[in-house]
Length: 218
Image (cartoon, rainbow, N blue to C red; front, side, top):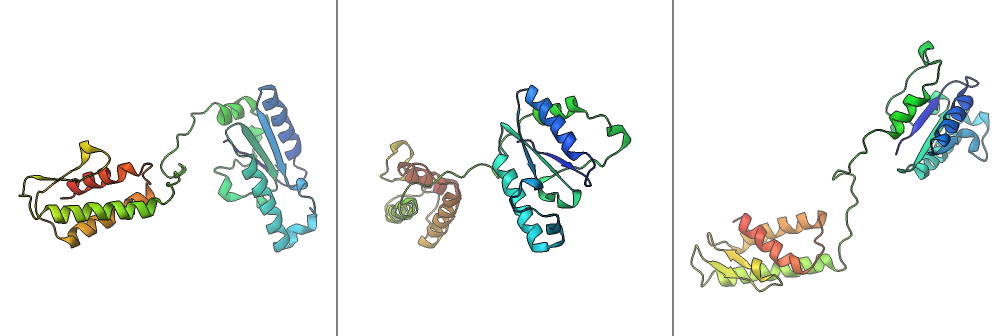
């Protein structure tokens, strides 16, 4: 989602530059959306001297930019340097003689031909948990804990306790040592907290995953 900022003092040629970029990218088949202060319905130059009105203007600009940010559209924002939304920009090249000729080919490469970014865990959308997931998580894990406490009474160390669940291949709790209710409850709480941030997509998997977690934290 490339974003191009064009800044400068009044009457320095921002509109002309943006129009040239707009025309060039259009010929390349790219959709460009131009966002500028002049689009604000009640814009007045006096607003820059009023902190409240300027804040409203910046909110409008920010909203317009965010609506246009996607993988297929290139928002192009022009404004006086003092009004640039700093948290949306990364780098700013100050005007210099060597930039007199607009490097349209290079700009296109920078914005459209770079390596696509891959989502990481911090930017991925967290999947929605199934309805009544937390209640089911609490109930199933409590049943497993109760079954382990009961099974330890007749199961020697080194053997396993069979827990009835939806996946028979993963229903054995290995008895490496006898664990108290307090120990099992602590592990259960850890599993529940972990599952809240990483919801399990199927209720039938809860018991099996919790059993694996118990075996890994024996």
